[in-house]
Amino acid sequence: ELKVEQNPLFLSMQEGKNYTIYCNYSTTSDRLYWYRQDPGKSLESLFVLLSNGAVKQEGRLMASLDTKARLSTLHITAAVHDLSATYFCAVTQETSGSRLTFGEGTQLTVNP
Amino acid sequence: GAGVSQSPSNKVTEKGKDVELRCDPISGHTALYWYRQSLGQGLEFLIYFQGNSAPDKSGLPSDRFSAERTGGSVSTLTIQRTQQEDSAVYLCASSPSNNGPRYFGPGTRLLVL
Image (cartoon, rainbow over all chains, first blue to last red; front, side, top):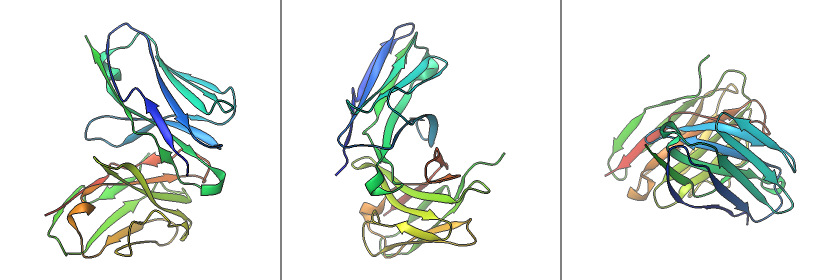
């Protein structure tokens, strides 16, 4: 059974600081997704990582994938309050078809 | 352009009643997914459609849950004889292919009293 674990689950940080969210998964995966969810809202797609060594950046967020370590990271650079949200990673697995298996989510709060 | 839409946005029902939740995917998206999000269980996969067929319905929690998709577009998730543990946010997502990014709708918040 594919398991996806994120850490930390809760993260409180100050504006201007850097931090990394980690996503570990238990078995070989096709691809890895990062989503953002604001309170009471739906999921917004941030990144899709397709291969080992893939790195994608959008604004202050950068995601990377190491398929050998079964690890993805979401790095936050010089955080701003607007980044406060819950971040989910999710993976698909060939043997489970198209289903996404989600991590528990990391609730990020950026304090002014 | 229009994103994924879902209706109703909120639904309050009594235990034992049936409910229907609707999803309108992005036009042209062949893949459609239903997920459920609740406090205790996180985000759970329910069912996946490719066109009108459902190659993977293994996430449906019981036979009270069913879903269909018609015309390769609109999908309906039906929950019969609702129970309090069915209370959750039901999210629909669509994708241009089963490998692409999933675009999620706003969800239907279901509360079973």
